[in-house]
Image 1 (cartoon, helix red, strand yellow):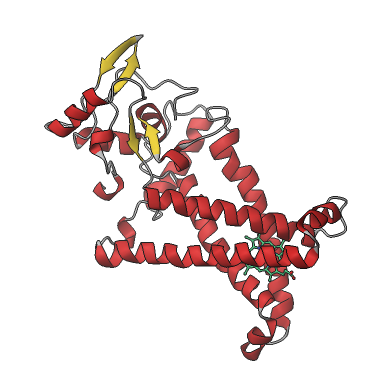
Image 2: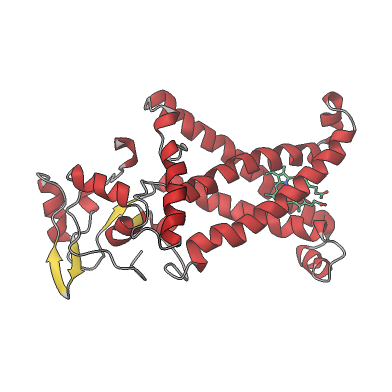
Length: 287
Ligand code: HEM
């Protein structure tokens, strides 16, 4: 799938890598002289890498991260108001009322971000004419197969990880959990924020239901982020302490080969990169 293979700035494909103790020049692309020029301009300082996330995507992630933490840290002491940590936390915000306003500020920003993200998707669909089914985060049958293959790999029944494309099934799961999570938490949050308005169309019990939905979805989201998502990007021993890709936008070829072999092979096939020498090892890589 070509859309998945994004090397938006081919001139920036760093091309020197350490292989077998020697620095080896890797020329990216079959006949792309501007890349070759960049190779020499960008001497070995960096690990060979390709772009994984565009700036507009990284900024969206940063806003999501900030607003999520802001909403979680102001919402949780309300949910667990009788816990020992809730009162001191509330006092640092200047009291429950102010915490509620801070919560609404982050919540509103998150909702604006969601609208922007929908616009971003619409741009790809309507202007760039890319079908949603062809977008790299769209779940496919291959993902289902790769769940099985990955389990087999974890159980030692398979030598290699599945050849994940741009996004592995667990990354797609992350994305869609947030997508529907925001629909639930945002929808119920708006009912809590504007109960009089909401009950003009909804029955009164909707406010109680919204509180349960909001509160429990918030707990689920916090647990999913701090356990599941943080395992994938921080706690995993191959990654600890931090995977920087979401901030730098780049992924090293070594990690691409190991974690997204399908995409790596596609880039090699398309002549965008030359294959890395030797097998990508396990363990730590420059990210
Ligand atoms: C996205 C839009 C969101 C909106 C519109 C929203 C709105 C609200 C409102 C109006 C309240 C009541 C606060 C008060 O009475 O002062 C509330 C409570 C709360 N919010 Fe949000 N919120 C949003 C997102 C989030 C997120 C992302 C989280 C955490 C991950 C979160 C966690 C909570 C919690 C834990 C409570 C307390 C619930 C309880 O008392 O059991 N909210 N929210």
